[in-house]
Length: 223
Image (cartoon, rainbow, N blue to C red; front, top):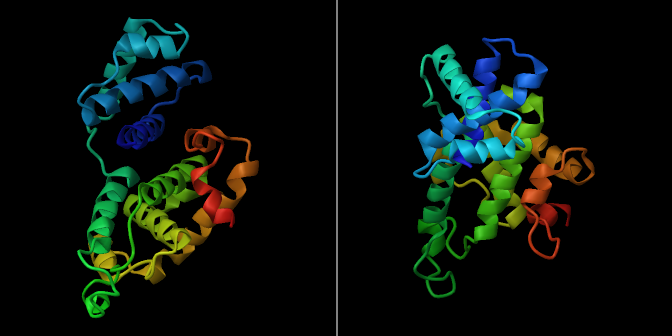
């Protein structure tokens, strides 16, 4: 996921500085993926894998040449904060907040010490936040939000859909630097993307987050 968002950032920055022919856009994409994967992953894909993905449209040398050209234009500035980096950090903080060694029934005072006591974090909660965040990739309007703001809004919306209360406790506001009120506009737009996604033309994100049996991670939002 970090590789995906870093790839997009690299593509955006490169295209903002260099015009490119339409028939070379796929080459830019695979080269950006290679750069991002080398930075983010222990085992990045081989160039041969990328050649296969492009149906042999480009040669090994084409991809390596574009990789070097892009790094040169970007002055080798690969390390940038993306929404994915922030969401991973916020989710870790959220899990810590929600973890409790005792239930509300056993320890009535727990709620005062831990606002998420009695709630439980499930993997599906994390998947929902990532699904929402990846939907934002498809809408250019979301570029006006800072990466940290976008990630915080995706997590807040996920918490709301999952029924956690409060949806944005003080410790998450401190960890993110974004109070709940400041996130409302972005959350509203993300909710709109979530609602419109099933009928949209671009279904790659939908298909990626569809579980065996056809159930979509975001189906709870429609309930």
